[in-house]
Image (cartoon, rainbow, N blue to C red):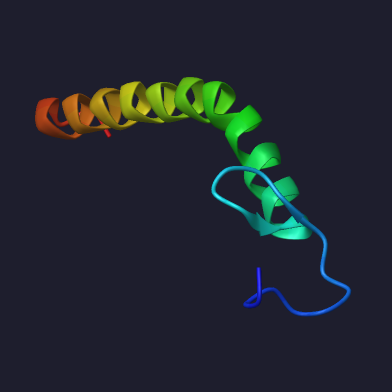
Length: 57
């Protein structure tokens, strides 16, 4: 534990500075909604590509 600076709060496994661990946990909680949004965007891009290919855009 000699490599941890004084007055630093550590949490998680692997040990991270507490603030960074909180950021990572918050980001991980958003993954499901990001996946849903990504799928919607992929569908929209596919629709737009089809419209362009059909000459309707």
